[in-house]
Length: 585
Image 1 (tube, rainbow, N blue to C red):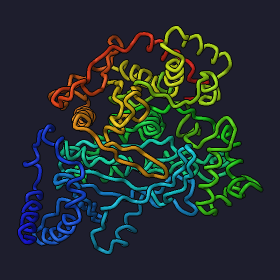
Image 2: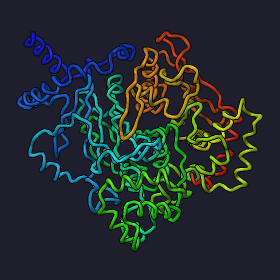
Image 3: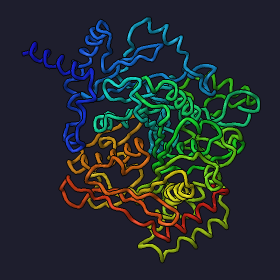
Image 4: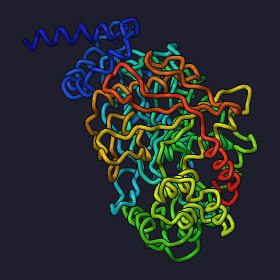
């Protein structure tokens, strides 16, 4: 019995050595494949076989379908589905350790990597250490992870090779620039559904490790501001240089991100460095966080240094002390910032450094100073990133630069008479400035250009595990659907919750839209047959799509529909955009 199984597996792997002709599956067929069947039952055996077949293939002058040759090293990835390979934890830069802490990343030393490999195929079949986590703010302590985390997870069709020229998606995870682990948002099933793209997911430094700020870092040459964002740029540079070896086309790169990842996409659109490293952009629930000046961050730096035991002496002495501190002391200090610091700018994230960012993203977008690329941008129906019930207090906490006049005007623009109740009023009045209005601000600016297209959406499907009497669609709801029911927890953890057949069918619809945009610059070109056309967002039309499941349990129909952006929402978002200087967003 075991010999027969082995023979069958070998035949399967031989067939996969030239996989593309046999992978013309219909999306409807792929939906019903159990997500974890291969990875949980057969993966250990298939990985062993992959290694054996790799040796045999070497003798036959060919390459196993889950081995990639980058010239300086060969990597072996997981055959996570018969048509999908996941290379997990591929280094894209030198480890930012010791004196490299709080400095821009160094390009990967490929000579070092080659020497350390000693001619062997390097195994990339398990998720790497994620970047040091901050607290989620829900009473937990951060600190899990490693500083040696500048890695990529790369997902490819099995057997993909140089010359295939598959379009590329580069994903930037969310988490408020404070936490997040790319392993919680896997893409194996995306490739399984559509084995004609390559996807890379970026690990980048977070919280104080990635975004420590004080003016002297730059002015005295003590380090670099926005180091965590430079990580993302270096990852994109690595993709441009090496993605062809994975079958990708470096001239067809789409960047995508949700929440802080969506904000990162917005920042890449407007940054003074790296606009040539991508060709399309998707911003999901763009986190419109203020970009304070380094001087405005000085109080939080002083508090952080004191909590880490480095509060005395000059800034140079403090930085030297912090650079020599154990990372556990830094993790505790950044948690104390989260919970105890009471200053106006009370978190670590990108800042207006005068070099990478010379103006805030909304100002750049309104003036037309952003990358001229096709975009998708959207948000969920009911999201806000503010808590409480007092509109002006919440807005002032989120945007410390708003004046009392600004806050009074908010109450006029969002009157009680426009809403069903005060809870809805609070969610809209805060949520549109926090995150939702990026949809129309970016969409409208992109639509004004005649050379590119813009598409916007309203995501309107709550997770099926959410309480039945709670019909709101909150922040990150689409992540739950697109990534196998992921429900992120503390310190880089997640729980993959069960999805219904209707959820699986809807997830396939979403993935098809996203990857159609990656492949064709239009989410409708390769949409599922049951899905409606996603209209372009234009200055005159302002149409968008509402992404949702059908009201029936029939998985062969779509519930998504096109709708007109409400005029009241358009006018409110114009007001939000007018406050960009004081919002610093």
